[in-house]
Amino acid sequence: MENMIFDTHAHYDDEAFDTDREELLASIQEQGVGRIVNVSANLSEIERTLELTRRYPFIYGAAGVHPDDTSELNEENFSQIRDAALQDKMLAIGEIGLDYYWDKTERKIQQKWFLRQLELAGELDKPVIIHSREAAQDTLDLIKSAGGADFSMVMHCFSYGKEMAREYLNMGYYLGIGGVVTFKNAKKLKEVVSYMPLDRILLETDAPYLTPVPFRGKRNSSEKIRYVAEEVARLKEISEAEVLKAAWENACRFYRVEN
Image (tube, rainbow, N blue to C red):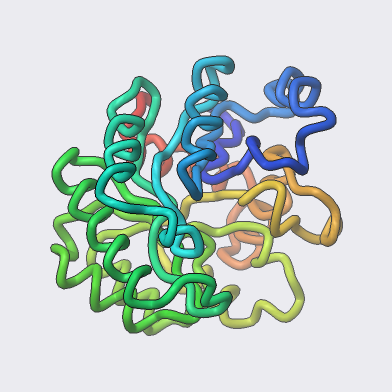
């Protein structure tokens, strides 16, 4: 898929797209976007993600509950994640993890449901999308306690330094790189991208969030990954086409879809 974009992490069910979602998605393939994975963050988003996967042939999904929303989980509704994950085109469990930045949910509750969702991913043999913000050590410890290298994972919107990157790369994981890498003050992330192997990079938008420069502050969408690819190419001293090609192959490998 020469120069095609595989957006490995987006939220097109977000209200930011309510006014023009259909219009935008109807034309997005013309912008060179080949595939998108819509990632859920809570139970109602799982339903909306399923709807998008049924409606658009190029949209796939992931089922999971974000750490901020884990307080909504209980033994009864947990089965909704499993049921959704078994549907066609639902490729992964995510986004799940720990968020000590917003601290919206008690840390013990975040940790409990993070582990439960990791267990589910293991049981269903699904790749996992990890959200980790200001919780570097606890995230790593819990992942290792759950099986570590037994999992296939992407560290979404990777925000830690080289040492932590090395830990995850050593377990065979991928790092999700998005718009933040284009920010002037993203020195640490630029170092990580320079250091990491090309075959472990997944390109993502987190649309509508984290829009790359020069559109920072505006709504993000999948075609803007080109600006991320451009910066990765600059850091790795290769062409943008090489970055997009590798990122497409990496995403197909990680999500287990045909190239």
